[in-house]
Length: 214
Image (cartoon, rainbow, N blue to C red; front, side, top):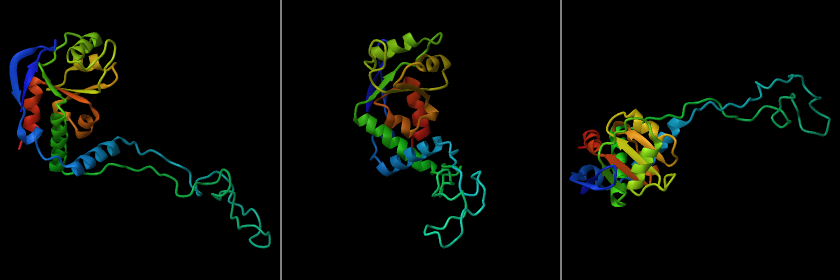
């Protein structure tokens, strides 16, 4: 699969990049996609939720009434979960939601996600972006040239993949909704599927090939 390389103005440069069949044209594995996205979202959870249970509520443990003969249910203390302000039954406790996935499964998931984007014709290749200083207006102009942005905002949810850390490009995009800049080595399944369109910098293609190529 060949794609033309575009410049920052959206015009063709005359160069073409070949996307590897091993990455952008595989048989998608939907279960691998599900597991990788599930792991990504689980890893984002803080897991600091906590509710006080019966032993932790600040009430007296004195027995409220005699055990029998009142005509009502037994009540051991004011901490009873059935009373207002009592402890919660099986309340949430702090925990770690992270779980492990094999490296090869995660690679299969990323290949599957990139294949879906390729089939949807939702990938563009641009020359490496280089800004002299952080400037949102300049970043937006590039996206407008690629028909991915309106006058003052992004019109499509876009993921821009740069070959290496670029502070000026990142800071230029940070103030815009519906767009995200990631380094090729940090590309993950969730970001790919969450975006409507992928913009790959020219050198990023080789980086992705190096990481996901068979």
